[in-house]
Image (tube, rainbow, N blue to C red):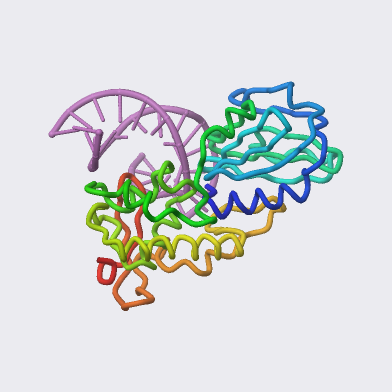
Length: 260
DNA sequence: TCCCATGTTGCTAA
DNA sequence: GTTAGCAACATGGG
């Protein structure tokens, strides 16, 4: 269930272990996943994150993977050990192998040509958001602000936990029509987005249930959550009570008394 | 048994 | 065109 900070964590850790290494073999354990023999013997030139997706640049073709709801990556150094349950594929290198473990089987793996992969520009929320571009998207729309934040074309990498946290930090109600958000409030959202996502990257993500990083370590951001998963608890800002309601099908945590 | 889940896509209908 | 609501994908946990 990784969002931007979790994928960024995997991206950085993956760079440490596979950059410059050659793919020795690829094993597919799940018939839903396609096998690309072109990957064999190629050297890893770069590992990048685009939104919640990961790109492994093979110097020409680019492996694109997405973990969706329950996917995780696991670096296994000992080739002799059997892959854990729900392992869907394995990319093998001399020092170890990268396993994708995914109980719900929504994760994807595909091979694209490099030109195709780089053609579309994807903004990076960690590098800062273009306030004017977002305001332009927001103008006149009645869509709830949280739904816009979760729109991957507008905020690539944003996920449900951090959208809840960012709106709380900005004191904005998740149901507020996007077009009614003032420029000053947009500045708050942009600032909170950068602050919260960067902190979460430093914490190596949020381990609420099963998120683990590449080396099976838990993240630490779950200790800093102010509203997500805090239904019934006291609001840390105004002493109201945190509520949980559905917004476009997603559990949405907020404080009705101070998020207006 | 039912409801929940850190994601994405596609359909239908207002 | 926009938005809301669902269902689908598939599995496990409480």
